[in-house]
Length: 344
Image (cartoon, rainbow, N blue to C red; front, side, top):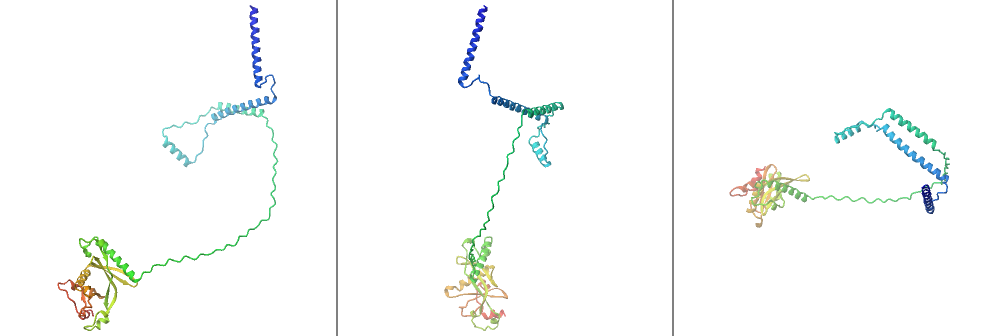
């Protein structure tokens, strides 16, 4: 029985040797030789790697202890910023409680500091610091400065462009300014006639857009010396002088609705008032003495007497008549000597 057990042990040891030899041959075939002793370079490499691993573990442990001992640092915040931050925090999360940082006991804190100092001293003894030779620094010399060359700018010739000619102002003639004043008076009448059409001679079926401004009619006067020297039968037309006053008929078709006046003051033409009664009288004058029959009535004024007068030079009797006469049932004309005598 002992022989049998010894045989089994010897067989197992032989099998173990065979397995070891097979593994050895396989590793040698792969390029690894276990029989060769390790070189000093690999030994120092393993020592350095082990030292780095220990340093990393120590640093991690030191960071953990530092976090436990010091906790969160208190930051100094300005008053205005602290108020704004506290306001935003309380407004955003009013119900979240504030947890104070954890504080370690004094004994644990002293043990952690002692362990950190011991690890630091051990690392300083284990690691040898080799001095580094200072690298000589050479300051390159600046090249010799070359004489500076002064660049002379070429003379520039500036050509002044001719100033733009001012745009000529439009100068209106006296006739154009008279028409502009008449159009202004006409616009005023149309604006008021929209509210009170009857007061300006417009009827119910009239459209104000159809109204138009007629040609200006000059107004005349007779000077005081001519009135004093007038003789019966003397023609009236040669005595007429321009009164620097005009009337514009406002027409609705062939009917005169009203008259607008314009007077000249120095070099200006000023729009005047509107007269419906003058338009009604002038309609009757034109109806009784139409232009088709060769009559050309003229308007007169007396600066001292309000109102308008008219004369028909083509009539055999020299006449000057008040326009109010045309509103009578049977209108007639007045002799010129009678009216001029009343103006003295």
